[in-house]
Amino acid sequence: MVPLRIPIRGVADIEAIERIPLEHQSDVWTVYELIVRGASIDPDKVAFYCLQNGNPDETPETITYRQLVARINKAANLFRSLGVTQNDAVGILLPIVPHSYYTMLGALTAGIASPLNWMLEPEQIASLLNATRAKVLVALGPSRNFNIHEKVVALRDRVPSLQHVLQVKSLDSGIDPARDFDVLCDSHSGTDLEFSRRINPADDALYIQTGGTTGAPKIARLVHRGIAYKCWAYSVLLEQQPNQTVFAASPLFHVGGIVYGTIGALARGMTSVLLGPLGFRTANVVQNYWKLVERYRITDLFGVPTVLSALANVPINANIASLRPYTMTGSAGLPAPVANYFAEKCGVRILSNYGMTENTATITVPPRDGEPRFGSSGIRLPYTEVRTVLVDENATIQRDCEANEIGEIIIRGPGVIPGYLDETLNKTLFLAGGWLRTGDLGRLDDDSYLWVTGRTKDLIIRGGHNIDPSLIEQTLMSHGSIALVAAVGKPDSYAGELPIAFVQLKPGARVSAEELKDYAKNRISERAAAPVDIFIVDAMPLTGVDKIFKPELRLRAARRVFSDIISAIAGADMKPTVEVAAHPFHGTLVTVTLSRTDRSRDSQVATAIDSVLAPFTYVHEITWRSDAAAERPVATGQA
Image 1 (spheres, helix red, strand yellow):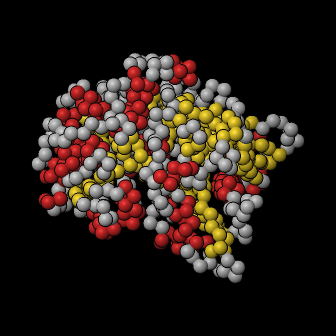
Image 2 (cartoon, helix red, strand yellow; image 1 turned 120 degrees about the horizontal axis):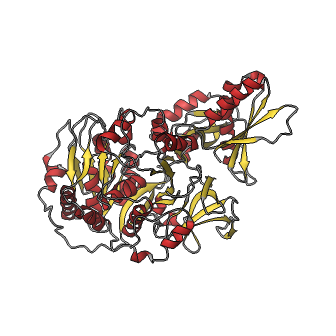
Image 3 (cartoon, helix red, strand yellow; image 1 turned 60 degrees about the vertical axis):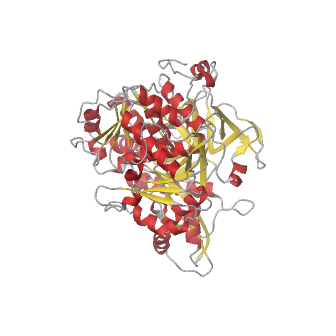
């Protein structure tokens, strides 16, 4: 076993860990065994403090590890009694409530857990349930605050495989006792499993949706061994210990919230604090954040980048001495100024990792004892291989990229999934030799730090929420006036990206951008995917084979955003221009050009531009038109 407290300064320390074969690093390779072992550290310790309103003064419900394991056993026994075998899926439609945890963990013990995004519309949920051929569905019952029950009623007849629909009682409404999940669980043993199953580490544990919500669902098959490997890696790289207390506020249909935020914490016997059914979206949670840290002696400052960006504007009004000097975040890029803020104000380094569902979460993470290098996604996990390569149109690797040369990021290792549930989607997922195509572009520097610079795929990532652009495009193409449409993301300082669309009208067609925006909003079921802007163009940029050239549209979108920002700061007399272009080192570079006025104002404007552009994940530089134009421009922003 590798000792927990070892230095992680760079790739040399990762290679030192790898001198011991992975199989010798742990003797537990299934999720159920991980949870039972974590619970055995102190069975009477609190596993969960459960809040309803994210208020530091409210009295929480407490669940001990002994109670948690009993409820997992009861849930697993119930599912088996309902005919769930190791190859059957249990669909889960629940917000962040205690039942989410023992339903999911019980389901993957009896069969396969399939937690679903309860915010999707009924037709989308039905599509996912049909794709997994779910035999049982556990969902929230009638509630004044959620419309999950209404969605289940609407989709019930659309899923032929469903044999049982169970309900979890909400605080404000009753349910049918015959379908009451708690009542049914209580008819089974919580002491032991009532069935015999020898879980193979290669067995599917979770079905997780990835890559958007339209067309054929992409459902990743996460296996027990891959999850156990990540839990081991987190325990070593992040020094996880049983005496730590963390927030449990990530959705349980997202790989990070499941593997890192839940199973990883429980496997180490840590205590988690549930902030309410909506997690960090619970009203006032961000405003109460520091008081909650003090109240529960939270050890890990945690939040996705959008939460951390908002938290950076909340005064620290509590004793936060319990926080450890580093923590991990992910799901979207973290602006360097936000990372710097927490390092300076709280003494906490935010390790912004790079991961994906298809790798059971994390691929790389900044070394906790190494150089920060804000803007980088850090170094690879032990036993995970990362390459940047040039790939031709036949999906053949031409060569590895040189240091600091941008190429396609490919990975291989024990976290890589065996594939999607739909086998036809796996043809484009892997390259020869078992290398998984991430769909991202990046560079590895001389010290093997990974810098993600762009994407080869079209996903729009809004605050960590994956939006398939085809959802927007198909909706707008149903309008009779549109000839061509392309949806892309535009930069946003808070959400990272916001969806927009460029449209080319049919000859003679007359329709306004606002009319098209309303048309899309009224027809797109996924609210986050409704385009915030629509731009009508005379002609779409096309490739040599007449495909819409989306990279150019992304650059146009970014130019619009940054031009509006700079014009508002600089004013017309400085004649501001903004260029956004591909860059061989940064991926994309924003160049702001200004005319000089007087020294004092020039300095103020430059400072203001640096401040406003800092939250974006783009590198920018300011150049000046003057007699000193030959001076070398100074790059600012993320490096």
